[in-house]
Amino acid sequence: MANYQHDLVIIGGGPGGLAAAIYGARSKISTVVIEKASPGGQIATTAEWENYPGTPSTSGPEEMKGWVKHAEKFGAEFVKDEVVNIIDQGETKLVVGKNNTFEAKVVIVSVGAEPRVLGVPGEYELRGKGVSYCATCDADFFEELDVVVVGSGDQAIEEGMYITKFAETVTVIVLHEEGTLDCTPVLKERAFSNPKMKWVWNSTVNAIKGDGIVEEVELRNIKTGELSTIEANGIFFFVGMIPQTDWLKGIIDMDDRGYIIANELCETNVDGIYAVGDARQKFLRQVVTAAADGAIAATAAEKFIHEEEGFKDMVINQKVPVIVSFWNPTKPETMDLNTQLEAALEQFGDKIKFVKIDTYRNLRISRKCEVKDIPTVVFYKDGQIVDRLDLKVEVDQVVEKIKGLL
Amino acid sequence: MMIELNKDNYDAEVKEVQGAVVVDFWSPKCDPCMALLPFVEKLAEELEGKVKFCKVNSMQNRRLSIKEKVLGLPTILFYKDGEKVAELTKEDATEENIKAEIAKL
Image (cartoon, rainbow over the protein chains, first blue to last red):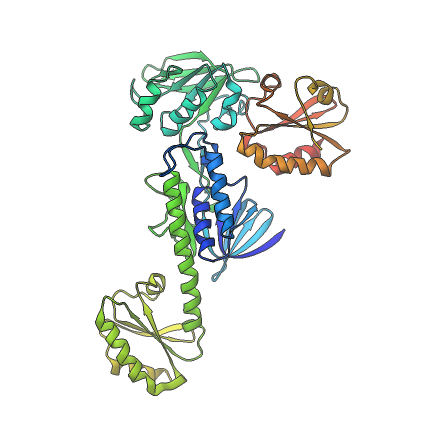
């Protein structure tokens, strides 16, 4: 049991988490990645990977080793543990693992997704006995044997073609009409011209049978209801993914399918908790989009930390009243106002503090202070907002209000 | 120390042995296996003299693996007095579960 303290704690070492670690550590915030197995994520179970920009052909496990090294090079730490809870302590979050605790200023949730289980008879009982969800793990077993692949999305077809390198035949069970696959056209074309790939249309798996190992797969035609059996030694399921977010229920907001709801900055509903990658509600779940999320979240996290700390020093922890003027360079009148305020407030000397905040550089603070437009002047006393002036800000008004505060 | 098994020594090292034997089926291509192996190797050191630890590189021993009904990785088999008494495969093959099964032996 160890207690770690970091600026940034990243839960999950897939592409989203690793990209966040690279960006976080490179921006000099102390960064730790917690991973329950080995870093790499789902892509580390993909042997042939060809859609990462600039990398037309690589293998998942190899490539991800490079990402880990990249993060380590900038100083990110890696700890093996399984996280079970995040406790919001206000200024920090306590990330609770099975073996350690991690105190963080910002948490990035990068927990990813795992293969969906269809739940047909025999599927659970024959796992590791011919039922598989990982081609790189198990395809080699099926040299010269017959294999069934369930699903027709990119993953099913890509992995199916990888299995043809070993297996005698790969029979793909497709829910759709003959000729219709869910994968991208380029894969479809390649799969149809692969002589080892066989196709069963309008069908789903009804049961998997065998004495200790997979021997037969029972199929059901969804149009006619007719059952049929094919002999197979292995069956690989690629029928979608389930986000690994069960343990996050009640901690952050999710949709009814368990995907975390996060905005464009990857912010969840809890201040200081970000979500990236496949566990997030999003349009496209790929390494490239997970990595993009990771970069965004880590950059947002770094700003969060510096904004929070700066604001705390300059405003919240001050013993005298603080006058905060929100401005930005696109509105020259706000800059003029600052100059006038500086001159007018000189009379108060050390009895007050005057702070200027650029709304462009400090989105979070501006939002926290509910700044809708500028100029806005907010009056703080003992760390609390006690008064404000929105849009119509007169220097005299500010001076009057300060007198009232002293 | 973990004993490397193949089709020639499997029976002698596992099935004809009195006491507790743990067999780790792995392959260098299987990422979860590679993540788990250091833990199992550490356990083997800690429990030296009490529990015998062996490993099978499944890719070099396909027939042996299939004969032992292992067709997916990682898989850990637990033997007592030559009888297979438990098995952990895929996501069930966690550090905690392995420790729990060994405790039962």
